[in-house]
Length: 275
Image (cartoon, rainbow, N blue to C red):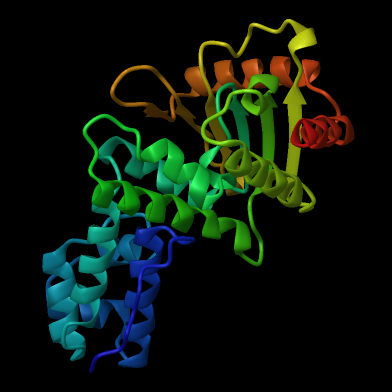
């Protein structure tokens, strides 16, 4: 039995695998206990995997395929999920789960347009200039970044609260046509009711966010928030430490106080496009 399955970038790999496992188990008429007896796994462990709370192994996928007569269906899916994740830096992979599952994302960016709002050309202009990167690697990274944006097309997308420094609109990443296209894309995206875009103007003389950008992921069901923190080291950081996240929440609120209202922010972006 082979059913074509493909990784869905808008869903956590753990959740996608667990959902498919449960679907095939029920289709085969197996209870959790019956499948656990067949593959020598505890019910609690299987339940965690089906609910996306525990990462599956290739060995488990193979045993389930054999027990349910699926051929290589689940092992093939897990292989594709693993290969898709391998295109991203290891330190960044935990953030993908937070980003996909968050009910809201609060973003502060002092330097460039955030990845979730970048055009493909803008993303390519940035990612192709990483030291030592090959053209093939750059295209893989661009494709992965575009795939991440699919969370914005979901039936219930996360709310995006985005604050950009005014300098983002005066710093040329590439030529004027590419930059204008990016700003037009921002304006279109800001018309979405799930996206709030504000600009922190120079005249605010705010210094709170000058050390770097960050994103706070507000998780559903009262789960603790997490943060993605940019840095000048070789790797940025993902943190779920409550004290660190609370400190960033305070910084975000202080930055937002000085930001322009939404309508004024869009007006500033449009004026920049005309220059």
